Image: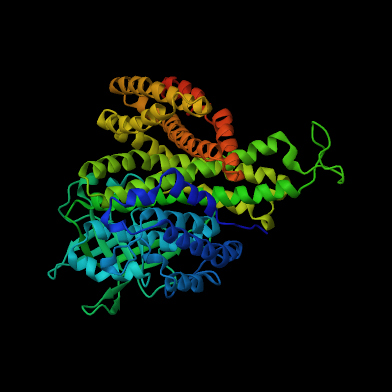
Length: 598
């Protein structure tokens, strides 16, 4: 049976020593009183909830799955799931980073991000139920009318109700311009919505008395394509003027998907038959409002793979220390045993360190993005808000795609550490691999994220956002460029930063001649950009660790951090050279392939 220990020490290291979040919060009146003790206390309790409440339900929930009653259209979740959610609500966890105006606790997003990492390690499928609600909350908080906010946000904040996002239809996934769901205006200002949606995570369940669906649909006179999409809030039960629940709405679960992983999350086929909805934002401007939710979901999906990377690594490490197999190539290490533990073998260490490096790099990036979001939303300086928003936009596709690709590498290599036992259900590793696989697909496949990064976030603004990130690297080089102990961490990042400018310009010129060149290079480009970001973050972590050791701190944590950073730069970061070469190979061999793909 697997186990899980919340990585509180590493979270505290990032928040308090690397990013010094409480210093940053001093400039934000909303968070000025948040101190390290408060953050640490919340994280400790969050870790206990994840490890003690939801983690024990992960395997049993996967085995049991969800059950749909096709007569009532109601879904029963696995044993213990509903009760765990009740504890989650009772503990105030849904409200952690929500607006105090609607009953939230108003804590920084950094804390909420750490909470969800631990929940994802413990049980990704369960965590998706409250996780989707937070995205619905964000969209209504940003674009809902005061009336809609008053009606829905207090219940979403408390967790009394949950939310979903209803985008995908059977004939269209990422290309939302093709959607067919229709919204007919009514005399009372509401809309009657008809259509079908698929792949709706947490689309139906028995956790709460109401589910608030955010639905994309077309008005009768809407322009064709994505410019003719509107967003509506469509509750499972209509809400009366006094806030009580009214009649059952015409939106229901018509079926549950049979899936490779996340089996205990109800991935629903949603049917709408004259369902009553209310417009969110302006007519035909639905994507603008939905992107708030989609971007939150993309960051959340990266967090899902981060959580699985961490828990898979922990269990692979424990197994490698215990499993006896062969003798070390350099001589017997466990003389009192018939064989050495497999952790003595170089290739086992390679797999373990790969997972550990991708967990620690991913956690650093997730924390960094969460701090940027706090600054974007709350900093009094307009330039800080603008710069933070630009960096979040640049980093969002990297978080989604790079962390989930790395999560796939990490979970499969952690499974490999177990050998044949990794393929057997009782050890739990095959579930982490199965559950992680969806993270590379939904909320925009990783190929779509790569196009978004290169086409929109980099070339779309002539590299302005990328240059802002480059300034962070330049600042670090200026601080540590003459420090010999930092050279092994600084030099590779500085070199790649310089190469990135030429690399980006070259692809941009090719793309001006033939747009397929951007598509051919984008996946490789995103991975290079991901390593540039990870390299910068590992250099910062090494900087803090070296200073702590120089100050006489004997905590082995800092030595371990340097060892992981050295492994990362020696064994993983050099992938960038081959990626730039394959990106530069262009699109000809891909597009001149009709005979091969006939």
